Image: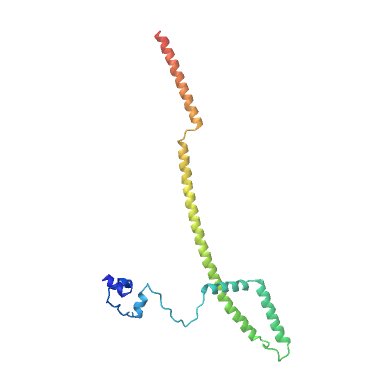
Length: 198
């Protein structure tokens, strides 16, 4: 049964196939069964919406947000607005493109603000994600350093306890002095006992 199945899918070399038996015609599987197969690549579907790289879009939005937060942007925006207002108030009437209430200037500034706000929020979200990852890494480093410190503390305590049982020079001297005193006392006691025996 397994060999028949292997032959069916063409997994057995031609030399090992039984002669005279033709390879069965390939069956077409329905699309639902094709999707369930993990050993075959997924068929690429046509997309109606354009695809974009979210990382590239995020990097671009961060660069724009950084530029919007600089003094250079404020200076350039001020220069453009001053030139706009001066041109539309002092130029000849035929060359003015935005009359006194400056409705077109208001529209341009509101359009710039409506694009700047989401770009700044996107850059802040990316920065929050980076901060979250950095915080998690710092937390893991702190946990490792705490575990290392606890291990070293236990090792030092074990060494201190071990050193408490080690004979030091002063302790050995004291023991020798006690032994010498004890030997002298025994010698004196033996001399006295020998003198009494005589």
